[in-house]
Amino acid sequence: MNDQQPYDPYDPYYTQQPQIVGYDEYGQPVYQQQQHQQHQQQGQHQQPQAQQYDPYAQQQQQAQQQQGYGYDAYGQQQAPYDPYAQQQHQQQQQGYGYDTGQQQAAVDTSQWNIPQQQQQPPQHQSAPVEEPAPVAPPTPAPEPAVPGQRRSAPDGDYKTDQFSFIEEPDADSEDVIDWLKFTESRSERREEARRRGRSRVVALVVVMALVVVGGVGYLWYAGKLPGFSADEEKQNTATGPQKRDVIMVNLHNTKDKATSTALLVNNSTTKQGTTVLLPNSLLVADAETGATGTLAKSVSDSGSQGTRESVDTLLGTKISGTWRLDTPYLENLVELVGNIDITTNTEVPAAKKGEDPLVTKGEDQTLNGQAAVAYATYLGPDESEAKQLERFGAVMQGVLRKISEDPKGATITVETLAQILEPPMTEQDLGAALAKLAAHAKVGDYKTTVLPVAEDGSLGEQATETVVKDILGGTVSAPEEGAALRVGVKNATGDKADTEAARVSIINGGYTFVDGGTADQAASSQVTYGDEKNKAQAEEVAKTLGLAVDAVKKGKAPPNADVLVTLGGDYEGS
Image 1: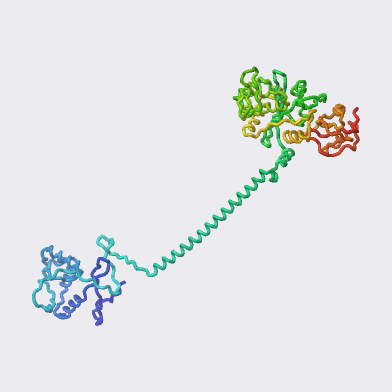
Image 2 (image 1 turned 90 degrees about the vertical axis):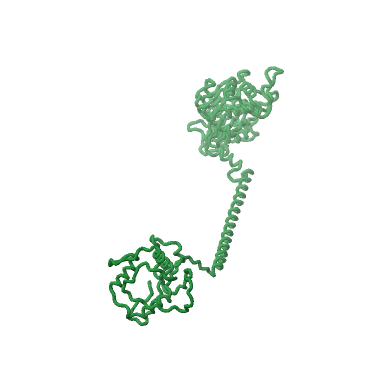
């Protein structure tokens, strides 16, 4: 917006505002000198009447100002082109209108009818002085008047020298910076405090977790953790529903006709494998006649099937099949699996004197087929039968660690033996059973134990509680529907003949006889049943043996029998 007052020729108080003639190098407006303007105004007022009205001269003057030098709108003769006159004209424009000296006009205006101004006499003229060199006039201070619009560059773009950037110092900048520093440091301190608090909480949680884990681990190691103690484990193992696969292995020594029997138990529920070694002195009852005899006699006389049924009756197990393994096949089996590595408990001498022993005592002994057979059947002087059974069990466990845990691979190994198996056992069944046992043996979830047997061959309390109940497990308490009631007989009369008399009476009554061994002498007999559904049958058993019904009581029955009869002094054998 332009605040200058418009020109009014009839206004006596009109004062002409300074005229902007250009912009300096900083982009500030440059105004025309007041002295020059007043000088011109005085010349005009001195001869106002000398000027005559000439419309053509006014038009020519305007045309010259618009068109420049050398142009005559009315065809009048123009002055010749003078390059120095153009340079002087440019210098006059660059000097922002200041006249530094007289210059020769580029156009002859003598023939123009233009009123001339009276020339004022120069002041202080003393002597001719050379014209000084043009000096740039000082830049006057800008007045509060609003400048006009800046001239743009010839190409239409503004140049950087037409702008000025003024940095105004802020007196409060230092205070602002100090305040920002204070605020920032305070925020950092708060954030650091929060971070330290979080770190302490995390450390406290970690310490508490370690303490809890350590306490639980100690309680578990000490067996004091509820639900994980050894007693509770045994109880859960005995009472909980578990799946077991049992096969019987009869080792026949072709040299001395001796036999060794073992049960290979695969507990799929607890992921545990066990070899239960059965002493040859174990008393078993014949499944058909009920006659009692040793396990060795049953294997020799009754064969695989009869022995399996007798052991099932005695222990309450369900054996799926019998694997007869003669010593030559055991030797071939060890060779097929690539020898075995076991810990031996004795030295087995060679067949001929002076030769190196077949087996050396020590840990991690590598045995080939011949050495494995020699160690499995070796019984040293004055050694019990249990020692030979332990060696047989070590060889079987060593073989299981080398057999493939893949059922197909184990079946191929069995088929390579070219052994004829007794029904109902097939090569595929045996291979699958051995593969499951091998999976436990390879990871260390396998053990070998001997069934405790009394001197007379009967099962004691230890055998029934630890092996029969925990390892073979619980099926004896729930006989199959339609199966004969199993009656265990324990002799407390002191006369062995009473056991045979009770056996005959029980078998004739249609029950299954289970030899319960002997007990301390008692004056009266007792019939005990564990399950309430067996109460009526227990009373029938008492009548069969000639005992009073009052002798029947509910109590704890052995794992391998449904009803337990303890013969006392009041029993009269027939």
